[in-house]
Length: 217
Image (cartoon, rainbow, N blue to C red; front, side, top):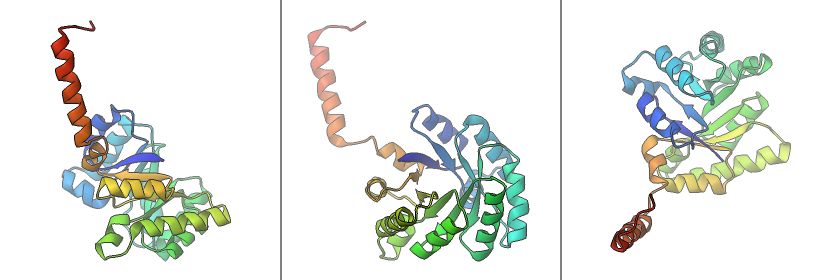
């Protein structure tokens, strides 16, 4: 399973790239708004940092506008993935971009039927929102499993990108549901490596090693 980081914070991306764990970046209008920076400038800077996929979302609501904006975004760098809403207009734009070899991420997916349409339209990625479904007492992980079953049955090549990840448990659920990608906020991604017993063990090893008076170097 690939790990994308869900942020428009360039410093966070730089830090996480150093771990060697990142396979891509996703952004959205809300994340860019929090950064307080120019949208196109942020996307260009992220693309200079990494040659992995970088999702950049259109703001138009009609297919024609999405296509024009998507072409502008795709022109920033070769690794830009045009992010489109899962609406009929968004699917029209998705079909257009598939025809011209532009990668797409169809977002705000909440049902298996929506994911089926995204695959039919030729989406590179579909983004089911796990956390938002959990917020209304539905099991987001069940949606991931349903999409996986449908995609495997019909041999679709659209990748399942689990989004709206709120906790390490969501990452585990996405992996068990065989999502292709999980996009995770920086704070949650860092938590994946944390466990109190790991820290306890390290503290004990450090104390025991110090008591020997030895040095490896």
